[in-house]
Image 1: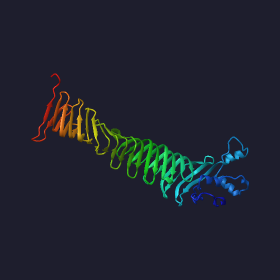
Image 2 (image 1 turned 45 degrees about the vertical axis):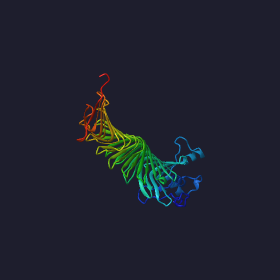
Image 3 (image 1 turned 180 degrees about the horizontal axis):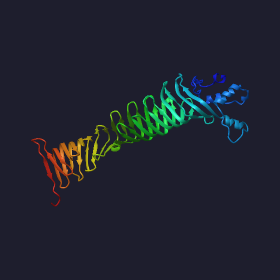
Image 4 (image 1 turned 30 degrees about the horizontal axis):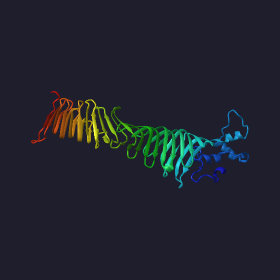
Length: 419
């Protein structure tokens, strides 16, 4: 067909290919504009060779009105502005001839005014540095390209063949010069390690980084976590999740929530199963029923250990006991709390125990304190000082000792007025 094989005025970065040698449909590769230029009928179409007319009839057809006859040039112009192509392959190349996308469709309709092609069952590849970074499929899609970016609208499935990330949505935008793939509108992301829903995902293909934004809900399999936030960065290769907005992290066992962490930001390492929450970190435990608050904490999810090097507050909801300190650690499975530095334990009747170090055995309801002990009761008013202390703060059964043979316990009894 001489009209197609001849020289065109197209971009050097696009290419028009002939048909396959197999029995599969012939695929013509071009931008929508060049497909239009190659297949539209000129006004003096009666002078074209018959063979050209027959080929155009096979590969493109107008869209005449089903109710109105052809009444003139306006009707012809409207018909000529809508063409149907069979066996279309859209390709785009960079300045050195490497592909940046390829999309094939068995049938596509192109509207000149909208510069959008409606493709049936399109599938193709997105390229970065000459390598496939995502494969794309859809039932139907509106395809728009301008040489710098590719836009698809419809039910779209995009798959990373290297790391297995699958993104589903109703709109896909590929900006190869920015190394940016955007999938939005009812977004679902799936991977063996993570599932997520959001309003939008932005993928940096070279970095293997996915940014979810807008009502993000992400669920990991190991550890079993669910994260809720407005912006979540997934470093796929490093197996890390980074939330730079307020975030809530729910931990599950047997499909039931056991612990809940939250803070203004967090980083979750899915490989080590460690979450770092900061600032304004808080962890709620179901068993025992406790709340741990600090500006920064590290939560080893599998080992069930919480550590913080910042001032910490631990509140036992059932016993109504609050303990504060400069640093702390809690072994959740052992139900033991360790605090150091300016430790202060306060009971529900305002009885208090101050010390340098404190170990709190939750099951035994027992406190063991060392260093600069000061124990106070309100009713009756009593003060005890010493080097060590052990006992139950709730029952006010505390034994204070001097700590060595020379040490002594100082007891101060404060009488009530009028007694």
